Amino acid sequence: MLSLLRTIWLVFLHLFHKKATIEYPEEKIPLHPRYRGRIVLTRDPDGQERCVGCYLCAAACPVDCIALQAAEDENGRRYPEFFRINFSRCIFCGYCEDACPTYAIQLIPDVEMAEFHRQDLVFEKEDLLIDSEGKYPGYNYYKIAGITAGVKETGQGANEEPPVDVHSLLP
Amino acid sequence: MTVFQHILIVLGVLFVLLTIAAGLIWVERRLLALWQDRLGPNRAGPLGIFIVVADTLKLFFKEDWIPPFADKWVFVAAPAIVVASVLMSFVIIPFSPVIVIADLNVGLLFFLAMSSLGVYSIVLGGWASNNKYSLLGALRGASQMMAYEVFMGLSLMGVVMLTGSFNLQDIVAAQRSMWFIVYQPLGFILFFIAGVAETHRLPFDIPEAESELIAGYHAEYSGMKFGMFFIGEYLGITLISAMTVTMFFGGWLGPGFLPPWFWFGGKTAIFIGLFILLRASLPRPRYDQLIGFGWKLLLPLVLANLLVTGAVALLLKK
Image: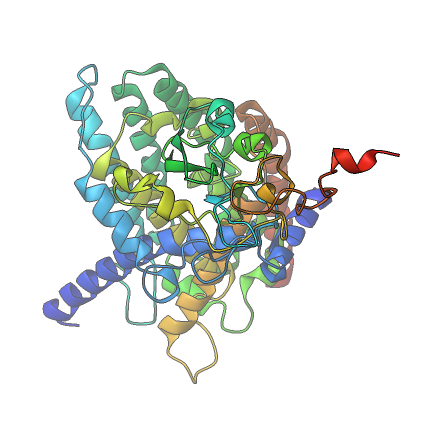
């Protein structure tokens, strides 16, 4: 009997406790920096697209929501001709980010992407590309790649020795 | 008092009661939320009060469906019974020295009779729904009535002994020197427990029991027929709170700087809050536990209360 009264009193005291509700539109949910939200395509420090159109993200995607077409410019640098993500299918698993060899595709802490029309959830490349290096600042794939692709001269890349003149090796 | 004034009082009381019953939708949801560390509906209108309008509109526009397997006329009549019987009980409540619809000399008996009729709506509604969960709810409603009805009436008899009248205005007037809660604390507790069982509110919402019986006796109801059960429940809360205030807390008595109806309303509001607090805090017993509790503990207590009250009243009279 006393325990019932104690229960009632303790529940009454909850009137003065801090409320758990977050009043959403005015007050945002604190999302962690590595939260898996909206997908973006990042750029390298030179402002060029990081994506090399390798299709690994499309292959990794469990719901097949990523579509792209690779192309190559005159210097041999690969880039996606179009890059399309259907966010009405995306499950925000982050496998595309894991699969990406050039840190191009990244998930960012943004969940506010409601739309009135389903078609508006299909994002094209210009919707996905951002003017930022994302979570990996300073990383430039073509600086450490084996090919020049108009980004660097042979031997000028990071972690790269200048080319050896084999004839100078003579004793 | 002229006939016109009387009609005005009847309409005024009806209007205020239905407004309160609707407003309690919002009050209950906000208070429950606060006691569960939430905020509750706070968007529509100031403090979210327009949730009442939204809920009412929703109820009006829902399909008013009568199941083909139901007993049609009983099914339709059942929700009306609960509202009608509870509203009839309000007839004898003195809201202030002048605002009382029928100043019956057997007012208390009238209240007990009318509030007991409410159980018919549960039994008939559950039976007419022709659904096994509804029927189980109806059975539980009937058995619960067995548990509380006896000691509910007896718990008020202590007050009647002290006053010597069944008239509620007399009972209020008898509390001018001291509220009856002081002389009848046990009677108050027992009456309030019986009142919670009478209104089928948590922790005694055994006929409804959404975790076991889905919604019990009103599982098949929709639209405004369900709304009637809803309104009936809130009116029942208001009724039991108003009766508690009248019987034990001095009714409309209070310091003179504010009108009597204010004191009556304020005290009633506190008990409505207590109803909601009970819902927020206590778990539901099994129905055999409630019957055992009622007959083995509360009935002997209420008889002992009567005995002691009678003895003391006799002693003081000599």
